Length: 169
Image (cartoon, rainbow, N blue to C red):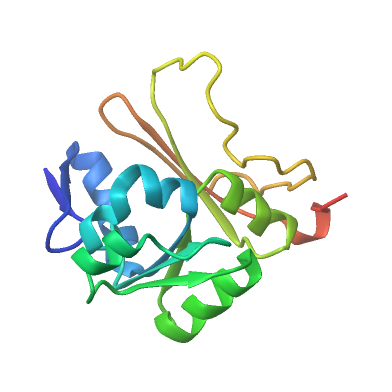
């Protein structure tokens, strides 16, 4: 089945994955990413991969050549993860704000700004790889998964953060 993240980006998944992912992608109104992901995707050619807006957490301005190619892109920048999540709350209203994994996700965990974790486990071993939550070294305990969906060669997991048992120490 085809899932459409937006008018430009779509991907093929099994029926089970589609039934799990479609409500998520439909609910996302803003995505928060780090500068590294922005750079390696070339800012998704000015179209957010999920939602109507995208916030890039960065200390550097977006590349002038990228801005010239996509002057109307609904992309915003924020100098901190706190600002990077505060801005989408203004832009998204009651919509879902999606924060990518990696350093930005780890910073959001450390700041106590993560309510839920959704991850997809696939049967690929990447060796050295990259830590899922970047340099986050605190403790964040999750409730039991409230969704475990097996697709074709993927296991979708969804957790709620247990705020009483989590700390950033």
